[in-house]
Image (cartoon, rainbow, N blue to C red; front, side, top):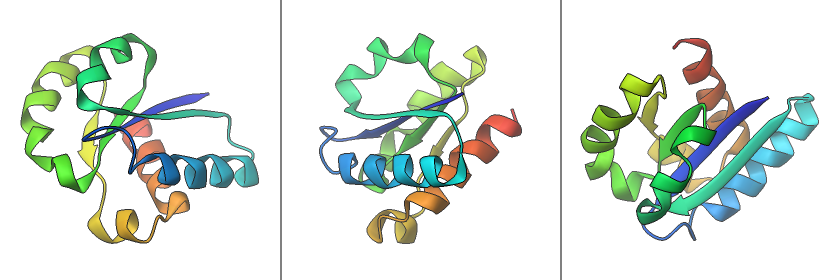
Length: 103
């Protein structure tokens, strides 16, 4: 089971991408728990995730969040602009899986 959290300004714009990622995981037979929240809710999920992906619109938070999460073994990356813009759930799921596998 892979547990992935997506962060954006309010958790709204990433919710469609979460649905696409869940569909891709189901199609590939991957057990995954994928959620999206606003940055203000991150602390509620820290102990429940394997990887964190930031929406491109909040990339400015990358260093701050990475500094706090990576010592806990949680990799943090920004979602590729093109993959985010096209809502490519398969590619973003692969990014999350690669993050967890390369910890």
